[in-house]
Image 1 (cartoon, rainbow, N blue to C red):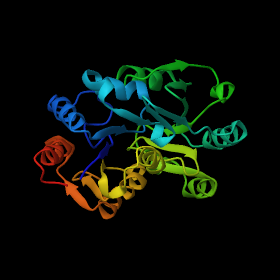
Image 2 (image 1 turned 180 degrees about the vertical axis):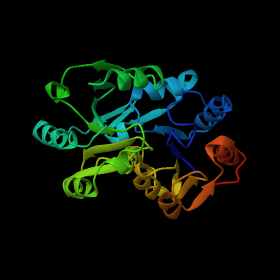
Image 3 (image 1 turned 90 degrees about the vertical axis):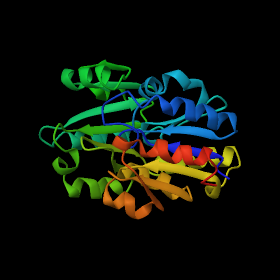
Image 4 (image 1 turned 60 degrees about the vertical axis):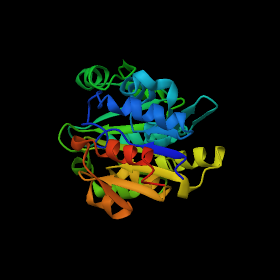
Length: 264
């Protein structure tokens, strides 16, 4: 029996950088909650942005934000903070890549040095944020550091840099434009495990959806793991099942199947 459902947002429920999902999701999630199923929105976004996506049912769900480093529910909260000296060293080295912008993220607050990126995240993603002269002045309580490039962050950042920092940190592709850094072990999978242990729910009772590299650990924590059709191949290889793409509301189709008792 499915008792816990966790779903990514960008590329899984909707197009990157948007806030609107099919309104049918709200009624389906309400019915799942009425049946005792816990629902988690799991994203690289901050909690403020996630809440805007699920505004009509915001009290019905829990949150895994900042790629698993910020966990929030009515009775459980956890923030995985990066040491300041580590954050500063990472940022200074990341600044060498041409065309890349660095942002830092705390629990439900982001800091930017580039006005264009600041406006993009505030206006399109619904972020809470502040435009500052130097993000290195705000390194207390940081849980995620993001490298952004308007074309493709993964291609702009050297493999040598990724390999070096992956020895001590968790480096993950989080959509085409983003490369995210968190503490080692700080990911959506470890965050989902917190919920599973807190509510005594097993992986066999867990359903999860994703599309990108930063979803892989989460999918591994669920026996009922789905990659949407538009997912990266690495994600499809990990998932146990494939759902239709977000353009076809693939996650919604699977959730309706759960309500019909076709997935247990």
